[in-house]
Length: 248
Image (cartoon, rainbow, N blue to C red; front, side):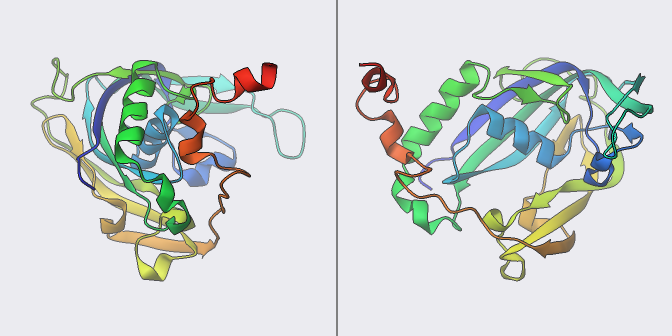
């Protein structure tokens, strides 16, 4: 790509729940101490995303002290009725994130939508408006908020602290974003040895994670222009995405 296409933002909220995907099926839940790469990628995609691009999370700065709060909840059981569980949330969180987007090379069918300026300009506008979709900090009940903010701005509680968080989930590589040849058409889980240096977590790229396991086969969704994908056309004409035409 011709440009870096970097965005930096502040994301914050009262609670966060960054869990191992294996615990999503139910039972007791306890948050990781820091956000996973996949959670930050999901937040960034909520700001702006198209299948033409893929977001890469570069760095995350931890701004506030890591604190937890345990709550008793009544989740719905798969067999019906309610259960009683205890969820341990992170409390009063704030992070600064630096990310950039690249072309999704697995999407040759969307090569016509590779307009670098368009995607970057929209991403910046959506960030200024708080995101295109609702922001969640790991779980739907944990509402988050985003706004533009430089990574280095302000003072953080861990600016002079380095910590190791051990082996934790990095994320999941889906078939439409696989880079390694042996993982094409597969779903792969990634793990890494998480480290924080002077308050900043430097994430490895997904394809660079050394601990990974293929979970099973999968296939990428097809996007057909005019059927389920608008691409460049959605911003052409100046008629509010066709609304004016539909109401006339």
